[in-house]
Length: 559
Image 1 (cartoon, rainbow, N blue to C red):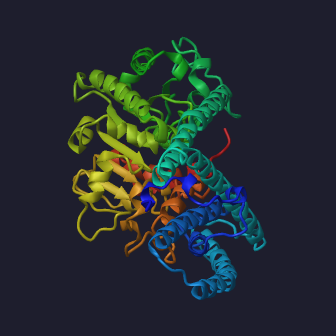
Image 2 (cartoon, rainbow, N blue to C red):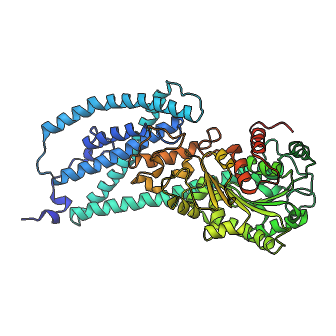
Image 3 (cartoon, rainbow, N blue to C red):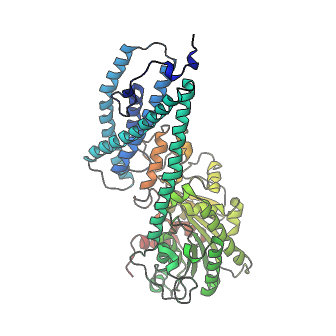
């Protein structure tokens, strides 16, 4: 008698070639059931409203994941089931055929209502009802495309197994087929698709970096990099660098707000093309600071930008208004790519850049007389906040180095932020935690107007609906603390955690995080004024001044 485990594929009855077709008439029962369930769950609310096309892709992708899980479970059950149950199978199929469309329609209706409620929470216009049709269409196309890819891979696996089955036992043949196809797919994604996509993204970003935004002026003062006498050419600054040195409030505007004569602010920047390494760019920034007299100002701000080198004008303008221009703001670029690509592919660049610049400036600043040296402030937003934190070993080092540190929209990888959140005061919500001095967190920046003694050295701004802050890999298998009660003010009470589903929803929310009004998602706007005021308000500054400056930044007057 031949042992089953030792039988080769050639020993088994020949199966017609048609069973290897990519497209088969039948789908798996358990796969369809799970696909419907996951599709319905994909329509439940997450942190932010999703654009229609994005919702369609999310629903299609989530349904595909559900189908894969269901198909795997079905295969396992069939592997250990000795006898089939045709009658039960028919009943289950009828249940799927009848209940599936009904559940789909129900959750599409509920999903529309949830999206409308979520849009109201973040102050967006309501979504047209006809968008449901587009969601269904995009979902189906996404599901079918991914299913076609999966079945093509299965066909390739069976073809390899059939060939190998002439020489080795069937389990070995199929195992080898799965391994070969898996490695080829991984190699394609990692070695071809990813590299090509990154190369295209880098070239596109580099071309974008060569442009100049409308409204950006050529510096005519010696107090700006790229201006007269500067060691940094304007061309080498990059798009965001040119924007940084070519915008900002005028001396007249600064004086009008302060009610006293204003001073021309200093802005120093080094682009990727300004020097060949992070250390060289940092030294170039120091030379520019020496040239412009930055060490004689009341405030020096070392700002770590986002991935492309972008700095929010509300951050820079607000500090200049607060000190009537008696400031020197310095920064440098570390990448062409958007933050999310830099975060996923190479965080070492922002760590190296922030460490080099902060270290170089601090080394010069620390030897100045403590009574007469300017205030040293640090800032980072999004990936920039990660870079700023990474320049220090722990919170005491961060708080002890500068006179104030403002970090906005920190991602989950920030080591100090994560430790502070995990060790927050018991009973305080994760989205607005209470931490020991010298740190303050704020979901609503206006809360910072209530003074605390002693004054904080580090302030975090984090919106409760910011997916950049709240997405973590743990969402795959664990319910997040930010869904505990009490929830953040703009987090839907209808949002619940579902394994895998919430992970994808929150991940995809990041693509819409900057498309909402200030105070929601990853948009912080004039809220940074409260952050600066809590850290380093100039003498005589009041809460009324904060409100006045926020109103000015929200509705700027033309120059």
